[in-house]
Image (cartoon, one colour):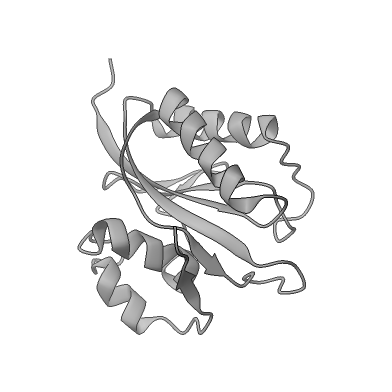
Length: 164
């Protein structure tokens, strides 16, 4: 049996009822990946990369899992597909997006999986919710806490905490 790992996921949606999409994803993650220990508030953010689309709502989750990184990714892709996500362009609007930000302190780089998320430190929409649940977490490659990475980023997009 695999040992328990603390992982950090980021969910996002910019199609349909965005908060309901995040709630459904969180429920399925809790049922299929592991116990959700912490969750950030909902953050409204402009689309990153392809800005010609609706704003996103994002949420970070801290999850205890027994799944391997590869199993976790398989389950994430199943959840996204089940919720109606199609993958034709990486910067397209989406009903749900679930990213593995960190998997314990592991560093994984294969054709299908990169952990930590390779652009995490360039994206306020990922760092701000992550800071809420564990700003002291040290990035295993960059060797800096999330709080520190946030203050060094060149991303100028606003990340606004929504009232719940």
